[in-house]
Picture 1 (spheres, rainbow, N blue to C red):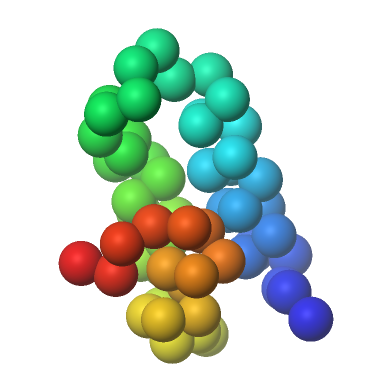
Picture 2: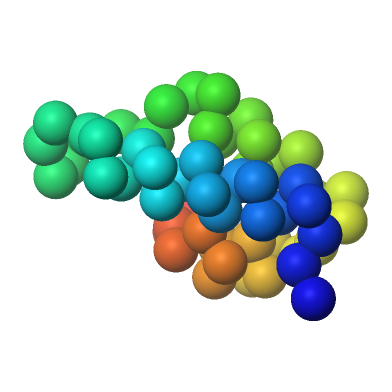
Amino acid sequence: MMSDKLAQTVTAFEQWRLEKNCKISSTPIHLRKQAVALLTHYSKNAISTALRISGT
C-alpha cells in the first residue's frame, strides 16, 4: 500500500511528464526534493520504481 506522500509524489511526477515541453527535460528541483524526502520511509529502489526514475 502506498502512503499519501508517495502517492502525491507519483501524481506530481505524472503531471509533470504530461506537461513538460520536451522529452529530455531535466526533472524539476522541487520534484527531486520530494523524491529524496521519501528516503526516510522507502528504499531507493522502491522510490525509483514507483516514480519511474533512475536510481542515480
